[in-house]
Image (tube, rainbow, N blue to C red; front, side, top):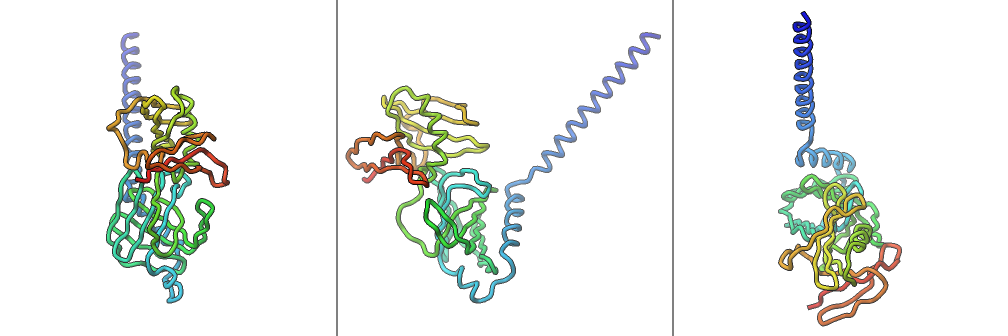
Length: 281
């Protein structure tokens, strides 16, 4: 009798375990199925953005959004650093430039003019321009821009017309990168140290590439305020835009050598962070 009871209890326990496993698998499957794709995420954001622009524009409202635009920024719509970016919206082409990540764009379709803005799709880019004052690096521009690309919503400031000149670099968002840079500099042993590239990664991580005084190049990844990766890299391992400019922390001005200029690097309040060393030839 005891053997029968013990066997029945074991059977019940195995059944309960199997049922629990099935429930976990079912819940995991439901969670996976509920995770939106980039296309679904973009469609949802695009619909919300378009609704905020109001109804069809009249002639006067439409005139504010005709012609070419230039936009730039360094954070996404949620306030997360995504690296510097620049958008040129021309009549026949739109191009999104992200240092170290290349260029993407396409031929613009018809512009959808609304009461409070304009939206246009150009290849993989969904671009929204609204006439709202926007401040970037202490300069106020008359337009705000949103760019949807690969599930990411980039937000920045825009102006009418395209001005050829200085392009955005990894150092365009230097103030946001300083906490991670300082964490990596504490690990370096051969000083002074030059930062050759830094950028925000997924899930709050920041990648910092540095060159120590003895010539050693290192990759430093900071996550949650702590270093998760710190390893040497070869001279042939270089990212797009790496080394132009270089950044040196502190108040001691580095020497300017041939084909190099040195200028102060400051934050948005004018406080000096260090020095930018740019290539001129």
